Image 1 (cartoon, rainbow, N blue to C red):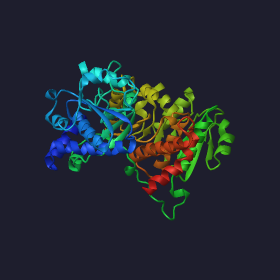
Image 2 (cartoon, rainbow, N blue to C red):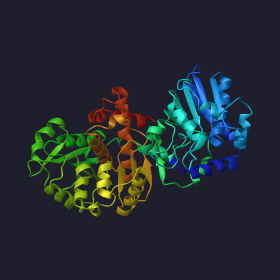
Image 3 (cartoon, rainbow, N blue to C red):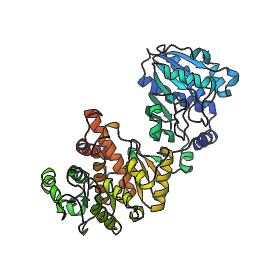
Length: 492
């Protein structure tokens, strides 16, 4: 799914009106129908609902929705502005329903309504909210109602990051129209957006196809999992070299290796320090072990003959001996590689980002990213830095988080749509590294390995959380649910 800036979305709206053709009032009716169908499914008609409508397009959608819900028998109270202050489309719908002016709303009792639907401002905002609209948002946030925002919580910029002093609706749910907005990809905005539901409204497909964007939101339809060749054997399904582990951190090597096997690699060889030999061969007997000369850490990398992908870094530590071995190795290898965790820390400690091979996949979390590429003021500036260095170094950067962003050497950005807070657990990143390496080993391009791997990892985590709750998911649970994720994707 393409993601667009708010300016581009306005362009798509205009194209739809001109080329479908359809008048703007009918497009608003279409939006209201889509919202109505969702609300009827999710909100009991016995609930008392307040709908807050603004002066512009978002308000028009909200008023048209109120008309439809009232006809259905919902207990609806609509709060809107003086018609003289509203757009013509808004007035068209205002004439069809009784309303109260916004100053009534600001005296609302916190428990007066079960649900408040926010149709005040939407995604087109470009400056801080002031005056009566600020008071309305503060009233919404003081309420004890379930809050549903249409398209985007009022007060939040469609393409931007929330600032501490901004007045923004804190929605429980955001019913975003046609596409998620860029703002919903940034963690600073998470406490305002709540849970997102994408509401298709039938914008013109040619406009969507025609308008160029660097942003996309990965959906299951994009993930292609092919059935295996009938005559496949372990030698044709890829061979991963995992370079991982040190004294006290052998679990990282286990998780990475096990994930690589579970995602379908035919063979995995783990290069580990001597202290981990019994641990690894007992925990994952399917994995072959290559033993380092050092007892407790990595000091050299073995031959990569017959290896089809490499993952390096989980649990290896940052001993100077290990640093030198890692930098020397990555600067010379031409095999598809995933660089994670302490390997990234070794690179940052030696200021060696230029030694990262072209087309490598690196998988930092935020702190590792900042050690490599410098501090950022917020997620938006960090994303711009991520794009810059993907292009500059010709690498794929997987910046881990709830909406993991994957940037490519061409400057494209893929935001991930799967995953949940339960995956914020020790070893989850090691599992992701093994998954991506396993896909690389089987012949995926670096871009597909990164995008597919992140999606599958998140999907397995979602299945785990569904069964265990978000509090109880462990990294092993994610691996355990990989077969379920793959089966789901193959059946689509």
